[in-house]
Amino acid sequence: MPLSGSRSDQPGWTSRFGFLMASIGFAVGLGNIWRFPYVTGENGGAAFVLVYLVCVVTIGIPILMAELLVGRRGRSSPPGALRHVAEESTASRHWGLVGGMNLFAAYLIMVTYSVVAGWVLAYLFSAVTTGFVDVNPEVALVAFNGVLQSVPEMLSWTLLALLVTGSIIYAGVQKGIERAVSILMPSLFVLMIVLVIYNFVVGGFGEAMAYLFSADFEKINAAVILAAIGQAFFSIGVAMAGMMTYGAYLPSNVSIPKSVVIIIFADTLVALLAGLVIFPAVFYNGLDPAGGSGLIFQTLPVAFAQMPGGHLVSVLFFLLLSVAAITSMVGLVEPLTHWMEESTQLTRHQSALAILGSIAVLSLFSVLGYNHLAEMQFYGKGLNAVLDYFSNQVLLPVGGLLIAIFVGWFVDREIAREELALADGALFKIWRFLLKFIVPPAVFVVFVLGVSW
Image (cartoon, rainbow, N blue to C red):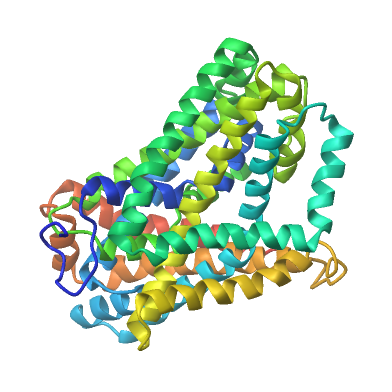
């Protein structure tokens, strides 16, 4: 049975641990694991981390608290939750449209993200079967291009990623999501620690530490600060409907502020540990610490081929990435499933099948965007680049901006204070101030600069 505070007709977490593992799993994704360490190293190391932490405290924490607050108060899918809280605060019920925008962003992200998750599963299979033995840079490049050019192979792995995600969603909140993340997320942390210890013993650890944590304050400028704001906003997973939906399942006796601090801390810790998993192998083998998909799918297989025990390490690494991919996909699909079940006559099982089925169909276009439709350009960008741009650079910042404005300016003060279980003192006033006056302009700047093609 759910903990006290959940409505009888509303699914809920059976434990605070399950909620935290689901939320951390949603926040920790593929981009978090490869992008954060790379951006950190390129933008001043420890100096960037310091700026990032400031941005997390001033932007990430306030807006994540706002999402969970609305989700728990509204006790429904994001459109319904926003509409309910708006009406309770005597504001326009049209604020529910922001929840619809969040759902649309999650849906678009899933169309392309599921394909990349398929790559990860394909490389996990290669790691298990071959261990990347005798792989050199040329072989790695040919292998990755081979994956991109083979529609049947890429589509098969994409469908497998959706099948795994769908099986978790299909089983429900408690028996599916909570049970899965309670196993997967601790496993992720164990895998990371094992790989960090391995790198410490084998070599390259000192260079990775210097790359990530040597503070170079001369690199801190407006561009670096903007990068830190963007990383803080996108890494946590706000405006993607997932956190608001998970908040809807959250019992009233669980502290939102304390939970948010734990989620933010774990998300940042995973990102930093990821750097100590990836870059020692890169530096030890004299490879280029380049970012993006090239680092994961081309550079690291070469490192695994050269390092002692590389076969086992490659399996553990891509198993780690697979866990991160699946838990993030679960967080993207669950709000869509919840919304469809709530808005139609379909059961949860039917809703899950409908959502996953439609994503599977549209993912074919994403797959084709890497080969047969690669020549299709929109304002100089390919199909997948356009989908990524519209969801990440437009929908997410606009959605986050509107959530901050709604909760900061329109939600009744007593409703916010009650849900956060904070006295009308310094902490509550600081949160309200940040949400009203700091978060909106910061996110607006990210949006304006992000929409520059």
